[in-house]
Image (cartoon, rainbow, N blue to C red; front, side):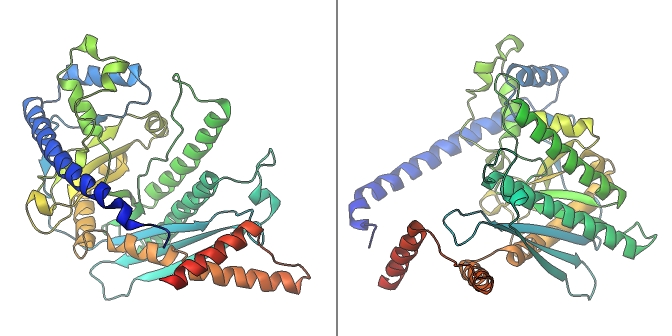
Amino acid sequence: MALELNKLTGQVEAMGQALARQQQEHADLVAAARATLAAHAQVTEELRRKIAQAHQADASWRGADPLGERLDERHIPGVPPEPATLIAADGSQIYPDRHGIALYYLLNVGSIVLRQGSSQAPETVSRPALFFEDADLYDEAGRLRTPEYVNRQRDRQEVSTLVELAKAERAALGSDLSRPLLTLSDGPLLPWAVQPTGGELRRGQEDALDREVAFLTGQLGRLRQARAIPIGYVDRPNSAYVLRTLELAELAMEHVTREAVRRGPYRRLTDRLLFADLEPNQRTGLFASTSEVNDRYAAAGHRIIFFYVNVATRPGPDNSIIARVELPEWAAADPVTLDLAQQAVYADCKLTGFPYVLARAHELAVVGTAERADLEAMLGQAMLRNRLSPAASAKAGLKLLTGSKRRRSK
């Protein structure tokens, strides 16, 4: 056995004590944050100026720009749930491995169309694709594609799949625009972006970000044309956008500096803890992330907004399941449509506390160890038929050997 657990006994006990201490400290901080929220719930013009000042003082600052008049707004849908169509897509990948028998990467996208309230079985599809040409594997400088690049291609295929399915579904409904149509992505709608240093990105980073934003906002535009509501669902979010804004409330305007916004009192908390007292199917008000990427989305007409919602079925903070739901601002313009979208997502979460359609799409997309081994065996046979010798590197062979021995020893 490689890990000698008996040597960790004392450290594990110390960790347990530390976790108990941290839990109490967090509880005290949450109580303080909620007291601040109660005292500064009104969204004033001064608070909005502070938000703008914080964003200007530190380009990497991520706060919440409130769309409503109060930070502590609570809302339960005022309309009864109606059957909706939910479309989800998720992807997985195999990265290029220079120690493998050949260089390639694989993308596999799973998708599901679920028509709530119908007797139809959900439609499920998985679409695998291999990428092995030089143009796929190497960039302009001849460097092997990075995992980040492969991830971006996976994300692009996911959103393209959502657009394709949403357009087909809306076309099948004909002129009936009354049925809500939602597309769900596992994670935020805003892409991860390199943070600017000194307020600026390097030229290559800037160009890459421009291309990514142009592609993704273009896809959002196609979803809007299909009368579909794009949803980014973030489970157990670690974001603290509202807390960052809340920290500004007690600061004087002249104290909203780069240093001050980076050392706020609630740095160890998340918004999920702040809003753990939401009732089942209750959400917060609407907010927009104050990020430079979101500014670019806004310029293209697709500013991304969000709310937190409790998707649990049992009341009480100990039972709450807080998620962050992102959507374009245009999708939330009609309060009734927003309520219907929330009802549809909540209904899909009732079984497990997580959207069924996202769980199923992930199941369809994931490539397990056994499946990867079968793919490598197929590839090896294809290479042999073409008079090539499939051989992994010595390092890969040794790791496989030692890993196999370890598994047999259990």
